[in-house]
Amino acid sequence: MRIAAGIAAVTLALVSALHVIWIFSPWPLATRADFARLVVGVPEEGLPSRPLTALVAGLIATAGYIVAARAGLLPEVGPRWVYAIGAFAVAGVLALRGVGGLIASGVRTGSAPDFNALDLRYYSPLCVALAALSLWAALRPAD
Image (tube, rainbow, N blue to C red; front, side, top):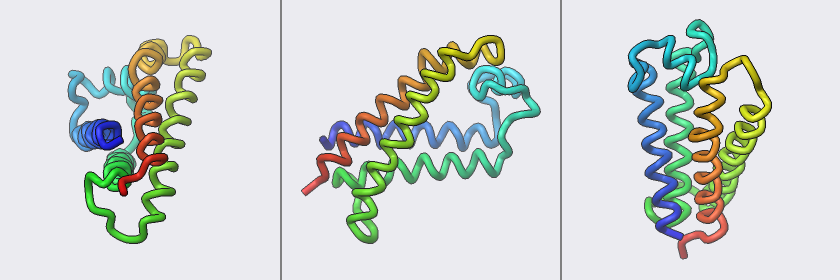
């Protein structure tokens, strides 16, 4: 269980770090237009604001902390029930994003084909895998 939670927590930390980078840069892509098309699936003018991207980065980092703390990899600060409920919430949100992305990108045509292809191949499966790892941590807390 600790390995599963550790994998989920580290991956969530890395995804959070990517979002922090994206506040300032379209890395690893060359332009914001390419970033918008491939990573977000919107026109460049539809990109989320920097504060919204920072909020998402913070929420993802918090999710990683909750999963790690639930598994006993990091200290719990506050009541234990927060981590029990939080780990299930993390798993649920990731499952919704993953399954929702698989369905939506599988049926959408024309609107964002490059994003849809990447969503089906990478983004949504990653969310489903992280949901499963987080659920494992939620169901098997550290003693």
